[in-house]
Image 1 (cartoon, rainbow, N blue to C red):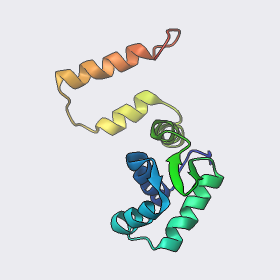
Image 2 (cartoon, helix red, strand yellow):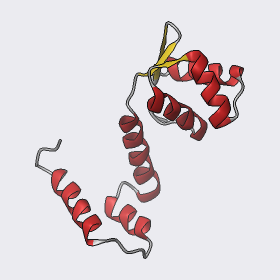
Image 3 (cartoon, rainbow, N blue to C red):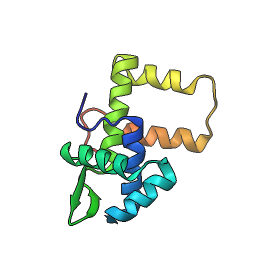
Length: 124
């Protein structure tokens, strides 16, 4: 498993940090109790684990992200496509759509994304 792949609880915990950073560790404990139902010991156990993995930082009792949320989402998305669809983006999209329709605006957005990442062309 990639270092950036997070279990569900880890992701929800990291999301609290991403949405509130910089975050004093005492406030993180409060938010973890409120949003996740976690005790202080659970919060600090998961925090240590994610710090050790290089996902979060805890310096002077202030927690920040070491890895941006976008990097974690990108890794998770790639893993789903690789594992479930043998790396095929068209297969993933066909299954994801599952008979639902999209607006012209959404179709145009998807086309623009594809054009930005077309092989051989620069992106971002």
